[in-house]
Image 1 (cartoon, one colour):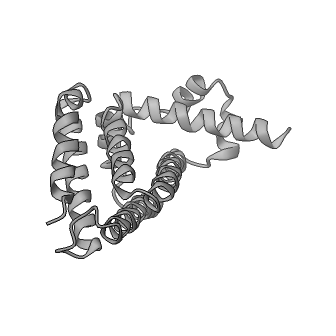
Image 2 (cartoon, rainbow, N blue to C red; image 1 turned 180 degrees about the vertical axis):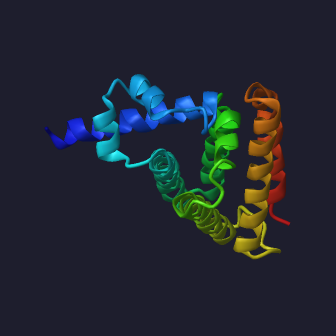
Image 3 (spheres, rainbow, N blue to C red; image 1 turned 45 degrees about the vertical axis):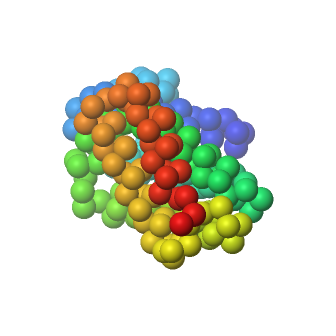
Length: 196
């Protein structure tokens, strides 16, 4: 079997697991449901993922990879225009908050709070965002387009807190609530970053 076909099957399992877990919860999502959603046999599932927790870790690691790809674009933009890069980051956060499955999937994470792979993936994503935002802000400070009264890392922390708040609101109120908050979120980020 080709590597591309193997990757496609693995990706299909991860995608189906995300959808099934977001809709049914971790405990009520069986590997049989995931297999049916992915269109694969249980043997294929267990070839890639020895346990259901392993596929949950793969979902999170896929999210980390998407964030890494987003920050590669954001960082590339920041070198020439940090304000534009910050707009790209805002759109990235708003897309995540608009995911209809976000609330359901967020509840899944509470089902396996002590799993080391889950904790490692969440920690990796947090560090990736923090480091990426710090770099964007540092570029903005050097370009004199962002405030300099606080260190870049502190400003990045506040941007992360804002993003976490928006994502938390989406979990509580549903992704539809994000559309009306979009212009305010962008305006608040712009105001926070305005040079002093």
